[in-house]
View 1 (cartoon, helix red, strand yellow):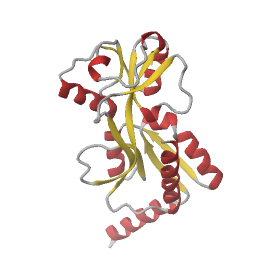
View 2: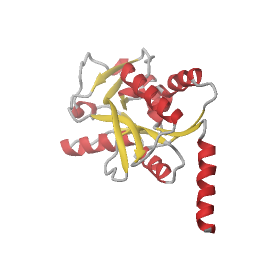
View 3: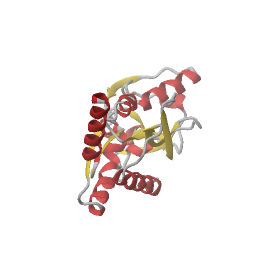
View 4: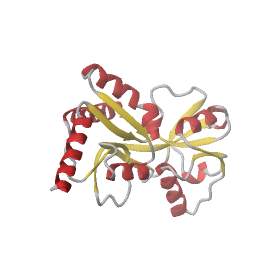
Length: 224
């Protein structure tokens, strides 16, 4: 009976902590480009709500979901989500960001053409890098990586400075793209990923979380 009571006390404490507060995790590419607008709109609609955000790559987010440290994760789909549910919201293509001085008028660009440039790549902890590496292996192409960075925003900044071509997800670009670079889609049907919301299976949304998820759907689809 003592164990049962302790469990009930824990659930009561968890429910009280969740009331009005949402703890979420978000992929860095989304956090820097879209999350600010989403959260500011949400705060206007629900001024008493509190949203706590952890910026993290997908694999770390799955651990946080399992341990109930966050309600849900906004980011790309990852393989083998046996214990989780993924709701796809948008299709996010990868793009090459080419400095003006290296741009020759391409409307799309093949991976073998990109490999001729000095490249600015996201590091191997990111889902984007894993996708790019897989596509390159499939085509037997070796990359000329000059810089490895943590965030898409850093990759874009280096490309804008003329240091090389960066490959980033389209969703990372935001509304204002530096005029010193040209954004060119990759000429490969598999150079894209689904972006959406990951929850644990059986997850029951609290009211504020449900409203935030609805706003995320609307924002991402509208911007996309």
